[in-house]
Length: 424
Length: 142
Image 1 (tube, one colour):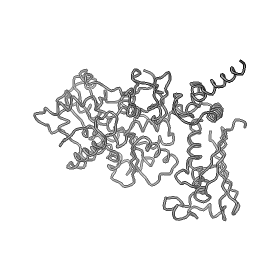
Image 2: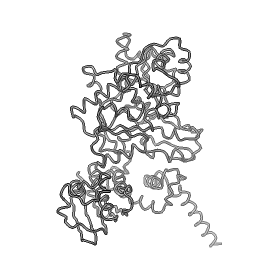
Image 3: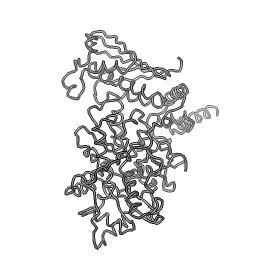
Image 4: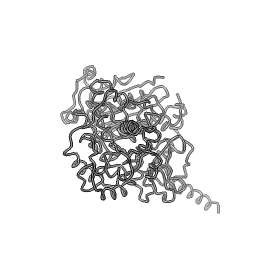
């Protein structure tokens, strides 16, 4: 493994080298070379858009297998609230939670419980006026990684609290230790994840050196076993301890609504998120205290590792929330301090800049602008770079050549042909 | 300095939603050049404000941007009506923007004051009925 862990991986056998993922990637992190897509590790934010778009299913998300839970003496499942939207005719989340216990987990702890704690902590921090406004949610790891590599001025606006998964994993682990008397390493905590970005966050966390989560199992991987188990339950335990506020985090706007104020904004879908971040950086968005951003359309229910259509899942979540109390989880003394980041979010300047030395970078850019003028500006992707500008950048970085452009190649061949014709 | 990067953009006066294309493109380039984030932010904000002004008041124009390692120089030029009273236009809250523009949230009378605030040097050349040239410099703090 290199410097970066990524959940999103290429299945080279299935990849036919088409331009679908290339054009869709929001950070221009994909190139097609020698007929196969290649992910530029340092630029990938694991948003999963390439998994969503690939017609050949050549992109996949690495996540933990169900077998892995057997390595631990005691295992706690911490399901994302999006999981509850995946089942038809579900009256209560207790059915899902009981199902998880029956299929092999010793206990469950809903991430939505931690979400309520994060909401309460955020409200408290806003009230104390301790944070730089507008505050950007830290819940979507793809968004946080995007800010880290592309929006230097906004790193200081990200909410310095752990995302609910990490909070849930820590509390679940603590409670499991107290309950069983086992050592921490004997306890496994597994997140049931709707998206690859969260798998990455667990393996290479932004705000701490080591996540309290041992792994993440994709919703789509656990779904067949879990539905089967749920269909054969003889009794349903009363396990759910989330209010409507926590469950609401599954969909876009849920976290923002839990701020209980009116100066908030919620955007979803990676392109919309980028637009909001650009405008925030230019200070065009004013009079907003809190900004919720989700890389997936619809919020976490739109994650690529779910099985259900995000809008259907959203409707089901609304229904499940209807009769629940507002919030069932409240901060204990000292809890907020335990949720604070252990590491600051630092801008990674090296990802997009051409060179450390500005003069050198300027030379490269002048060269680039010259190359672009000669390219057809069709952004066709046939060269293996997403746009003509990206190809020009690859050329000045020494990673591609002008004749990778099929139009330039054709021109060159034509010239050679004309010359030969004249000499004969 | 010989290795300046020169960029030129036409700013269309027809479409409001396109205002910001030039400043957005400049911002992107400054980021790939690895400029100090503060200089990038100030350039983007000052230039966007000026672009919007050109669209609202002058039916568009053009921008010339020269990027040097230690500064960014911007000229925004239009053939609009000119600014009758520059001193007044520099006052916070003073605006001559029409109502349809105000309803979009612009025209708060902060354009020129903000441009001045975010840039290090600002100079206006304006002639009634001929147009306005706005020169801006953003210095890169090292």
